[in-house]
Image 1: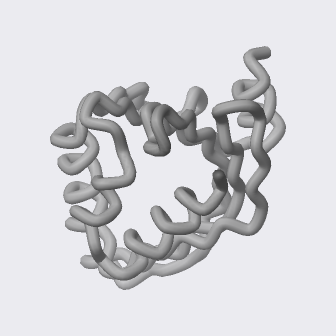
Image 2: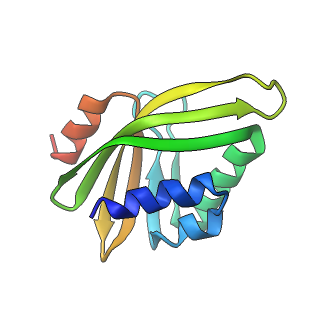
Length: 127
């Protein structure tokens, strides 16, 4: 079950946005983290594509590495490091993250970002 998240990271790191999008359901939803400055929901593959393309327009380098993946029913909690380098600034560095992916029929139907792993686990458990 966690293989889909590993595929997502591989495709993203290879710059394969369309391949990454194939791992989502047509009606998938992506949510910004609860403690992010802007609360945003991207709907459907087109909305998620728009988010991905906006992200890539800002970052010259954007690579994800999942270090930990756990399954909770139909949800996968992952944590890892996002390594980025600004397209304009050239500033680079690691950004720790956590995420929860809810699966339906073998694809990601909901993907939510977190900055705190324990909060992601609580969300996956329905707390």
